[in-house]
Length: 241
Image (cartoon, rainbow, N blue to C red; front, side, top):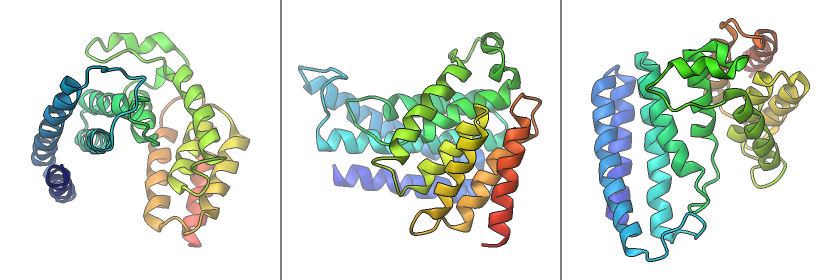
């Protein structure tokens, strides 16, 4: 099992290098290789599990495989988004989200949960105000973006106040979701929590959230002002970093 996980992580590193070099198609192929191998292994776990139920906790090895799969799908989603293929990006994030949100694996992450929604907003900005506007994308699983943003904000707030109290990624995710929900106060409080984590968030984290919020702030949505304020806050802090 350790060899399988190591192989998947090596493929992930290779894909990240390919992505940084602009070789997005090669990176996606590398990620798919890792995903296929892990999903085959995970299917073997489930086949051997007579009580195959999402309500039952997975063993350590199965959980480790699911963790890597959620991560690989998340990177695949980011790769496809950089390519401009928002449909494939959202589909990859959806697949990662299924592992990330399955109580069987007990994963504590919001990466795919958030990005599957952000990608849908980039694809269809009207989804923030009209839940049915996404139905025209027949090749994409329908998701009520506003409903899921509200649900995710509640989940993230609990995490930031509990198990993820010093996780700047969780706080940053909460800031974006709060802004998208029109909760200006909540967004700034989350950003302050983000900045106060110890060790401090690296400048790359400031830039990553600034870029994501900046893309969303350019869209014609009811949340443009809230997003712009959050972006300015990050920019000011990053400048004095």
